[in-house]
Image 1 (cartoon, rainbow, N blue to C red):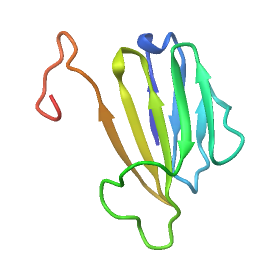
Image 2: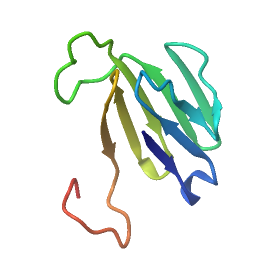
Image 3: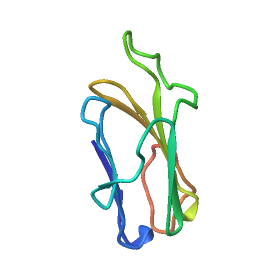
Image 4: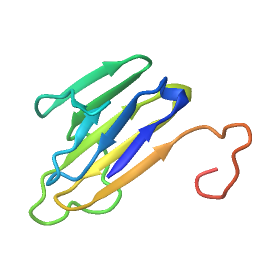
Length: 104
């Protein structure tokens, strides 16, 4: 499961789990009723579809399900949901005070 939240989301929290878990919530509420679907909040959007280049391979027996989060500050989080695990991609510009080597 991945949870995205904090001050830059104005106190909102987005949670995404595996396909088996069924978790796709904003502030603890299911906001996307079906597949595909989308939701827009205060300064962010969440889209649930099958679009996007898979970072690895589609696991055998899995249907491609992708959660796209377009967040403030140009942050984009893409979650590829599989039955019992997830692949996650994070795209963002370097922020003041940020360090590290992955993707900077």
